[in-house]
Image (cartoon, rainbow over all chains, first blue to last red; front, side, top):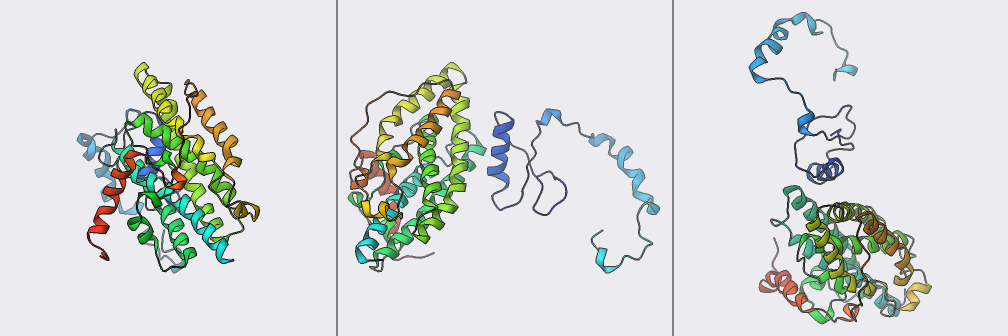
Length: 83
Length: 254
């Protein structure tokens, strides 16, 4: 779902449906009741390739201690605080 | 507005409001009973949309009556003979196919009605109609999707979907009756003449039926009479369930 004034689609949940068109309708009914979004993508779950929890260390730990990849040593002006 | 016109406008708003109110109640009966969880939420949403329309229309009807009643008085304290909804709306849900057939038919009609009513000379009705038509467009879409899939599905689903259409088709004609409506309202472009939406409504419905590889039923119509307070046996049970709490505790508030 891409929220109002959002930039990219984020995962909001899963559901059952007969086919893609019904999935879009079901997503509209179940996940946009409170005006959460303006655009919906649906994907059949078997089409999703996911990283395995067993590989968590290998995949994600190396990035944890590389402080030089973050712009932490710049002084951000107030106008771009959201970056 | 003259007093006479106000009475007519009130009756008109009440009839439209009653349609939405009674159908909303039938949609609510699907909650916890729908075939899928997502459908449960979908039908609840549709019911709430209809309830919202009913509230606006009944509030306006109460105000136009000018006798100090409000929407709750009209909803909970009227008896069967005072309700002016069409009989199509009060038909029991029976099974999912019957319910989807009824929703398709009523929503197609409502879509045509509200699209035209949005141009009403009466500002309140026009505003209500403008909001309602977007909601109703989705209801048509939702019902169509199911009718197509059930119709063009397995042998069992096709048979039941066809039967669903046959079950509700005798109640279609009543939607397009003109004679309950004060002609003056139509002349003054306040109300929409029901017969004027007949062709567009049937075109929409028949298009979906064809896509669903089903046949348009050819069954005689019932005499109707909902607009004059004549209702089916099931209506009594619906009203009992709907009204008894409010009537058991008159004047109670949350």
